[in-house]
Image (cartoon, rainbow, N blue to C red; front, side, top):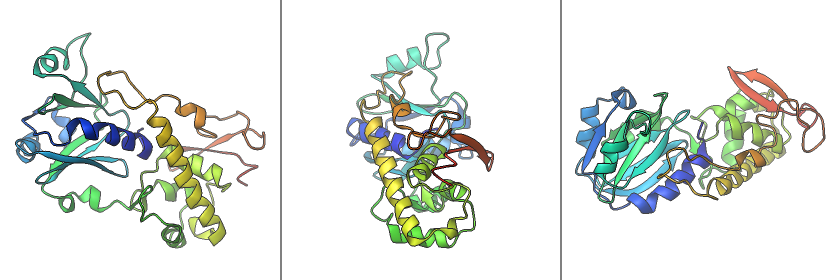
Length: 279
């Protein structure tokens, strides 16, 4: 699932490609991608509008329009694809064997931007303003924003009884962390993912804040080298597995102490950690 670093890399790469472009037409090929919003509402709010910028909050990619905003959430497998013109789009979008899966296509001045999620979990919606979007209103502080300070994190931790891992996955607290980078951050801070969030001492909260920012920045650098290639439908982020210390490494040696990495379930999600380092 794309988390904050992956979505930020997409935003930075997409920005110079579409900023200033006018949305000529919105093609909704699979209406499920706009639910619960109707495809006609998406088209009405976007067609004729100009994309002034590309932003991000948590795992949401934002197309900032001259009037309103479009939100794209990739969920598990969503991604973007670029078509040079309408002829290429019509020839390749959802064609049989040689085609490219597309749920929604944005016809812009320089080409067509396609949003695709073959499993149909991803969503594309448009709003008159950010305030109209309930999902954006419910997001907590972005984990790579200036507002994400040690003091704020410590305050949020003090008010939560939840286990640390589940606390970090709560997008209403800190937006952008998912299963991968929450596990990585807790390993780096040497904190047991099962501990109650409110049990952290100020020194431990500071370590966790530093770990989160460090892990996300390192992952972002990896996601940008190489940068996303929207022209290649099969492209995906390369090299992330080399920077992971615990996620997906059950049974492997901890790269800090040598003990085996364990996997447990928390809230129906897998958590990877080192019992010795994080005990």
